Each structure stands twice: as C-alpha cells, then as structure tokens.
Image (tube, rainbow, N blue to C red; front, side):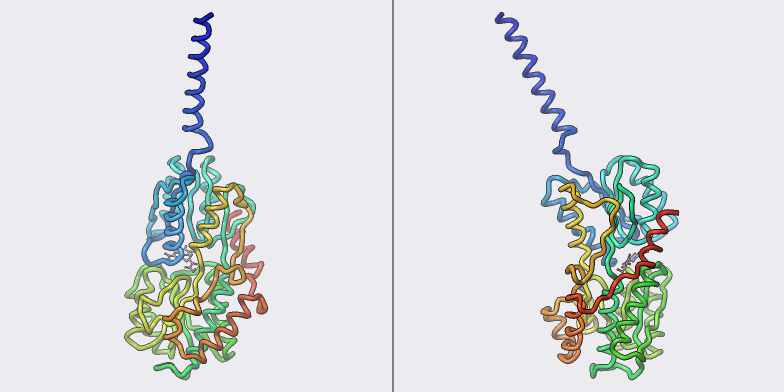
Length: 355
Ligand code: RBF
C-alpha cells in the first residue's frame, strides 16, 4: 500500500513537472517573435525610423513580444523579394513588421510560400489576407495641409520669397501614393491659397543621392521655387543644403525636422507612424488585430498633426501665416473640410497585391 502511494506520488510529481515544462516551452507565455524588415536604410527615412523606434520601445516594456532582429535590406529593390522570402522562411519570426506600398504585394507573395508567418505593413493597403494587416495613412490630407502651408509662406513677407506662384517637391520615385495622393494633394493645398500656384516636382530616382537632390533643388530655385518639400530618404539632406545656401524654406514631411536646419525647416507636418505601430502591436498582443481589414488613419483620428505650440514652429513663421494655416488646419482636423483618400487609388494599391 505504502509502495503504491509512493509510486502514485512520484507519477503525479512527474506529470506536474512535464506539464510545467510544456507550458513554459510551447505555452501561452511564449513571446511573439518579431522581425523588422526595412526596405531601405534606417537613419534618414521618417517612416522607417519611427516604425522601428516604436517596435523597439514596445518590445522593451512588453514581455509578450520579443524583437529578434532588425534587418536593413538596402536600396537595391531588385533584391527585396529574395531577401524578404529568406527572412520570413528562416522560421525566426512569428510576425514581420515592415513598411511601404511596394511591400504589400511582396508580403502576399511570401505568404503564399511560407505558412507560419504573418506581416504587419505600414503605408500599404491590402484587403482580405488573413495573415496580413496593413495601416494606410491619408496622405492626400497630409499633403494638402503641407501644400497649403507652402502656399502661405510663398506669398508671405518672409525673406527671399519670390513673386512666382511656384513651390517645389523632390521625391524618391514614382508609386501610386506619391503620384495620386501626395503630389496632387500638395498642389491642391497650394492652390487653395491661390489657384495660380504650381507645384514643380523632380524625381530623384533613388532614396539616397543627396548630391543629385541638391542639384535638383538648385535648379528648382532657379525656376522661382521658394518653398520645398522633400520626400527622398537620405536625399533629403541635399534639398536642405540647397535651401540653406539660398536662404529658402523647407517643410518637413512625416516627422519632426526643425532641428535639421533651424530657420530653414519652418514647419513639420507629422504622420505618427510610431503611434500607429504601437497601436498595432498592442492589438497583436491582445489578439484583436483585424487581419485582412486595412485601416486608414488621418488627422481626424490624431495620426496627422502639426504641433502648434512648438516654439520652433512659432518662432519660424510670422503670426499671420500661422493664423491662416491654423484656420484651415482646424477645419481638416474637425472633419469640417473632408479630404478623403480616393477609392480608385485604394483599389489600385490593393490590386497590385492580387495579381
Ligand atoms: N521613404 C523614405 O523616407 N525612405 C525610403 O528609403 C523610401 N523607400 C521607398 C521605396 C518604395 C518602393 C516606396 C513605394 C516608397 C518608399 N518610401 C521611402 C516612401 C514612403 O513609403 C512614404 O510614402 C513616404 O515617406 C511618405 O510618407
């Protein structure tokens, strides 16, 4: 009898031990392993930098995720499909976080080949894949606010502005969001100040050549451009130096750029990639991320904004410019002036992932 009891106790203890190990190894407490795939380089690309910062911070304060690796794929886009496939197929990640419109279709291709991985992609829009979540921002709205501020500065009494109704944008490459949202949105914003405004654009052809970007900005200045936008990754530095040398102005797209060139960068229109990334990770951990159902975030939801109380903004711009801008800004934030993402644009971005 005593012996039977001892055997039963031993078996019971062993079962407890095995169960504990099992919970520890494969149980609910195993952290979600995250990989970050940067289609480009970190350091000068606002959407990638803010996304990565947010993932890093989230992983630091949250035991339920583990940031395994941040991989910079570099600027040769021909290599991205193979790099993304290898990254995903390594088996090291449960969820891969990445960004930009071109990555939506690339992730779908990888999902068809690698069964156990999921993707979250900022700045992309793909409907209906239950292992893919995309967050899209209302860039038409952001660009409209940007263009409106460009126009106001260009007709202001600030130093060195020209009489031409001309503002300029240097951008990295063609893609749907650039061609059908950012460029037309920016021009519409400037034309809301004065219909005579014209947005001069120049494509850099890559996301890194600052010397070429400077030349492009210089020749724009020769055409009467006095306010620049620059959406060119590491190329942005070239636009900045052109504007600094000529005493002209730059508005910063997506992130806080005032300190890059005080007095030259006179306004930053923020797109809060970091907040969106944090929210997505919270939903991932809670199990509430709406896989397959893209979301669109804009100024009404607080994801596109200008810090109106920032001393660097206040000190960089005359009061009348700020007053006029803020009137328009409040209309956009409150939804009184509705600037929506055209459905045909969304459909085209989505369609690229379903070919
Ligand atoms: N934006 C950057 O700031 N740096 C980049 O290296 C960069 N590479 C891009 C590559 C492709 C193929 C595409 C479609 C977009 C890229 N963007 C890049 C643009 C980015 O996704 C976003 O549209 C802009 O930064 C405006 O928010």
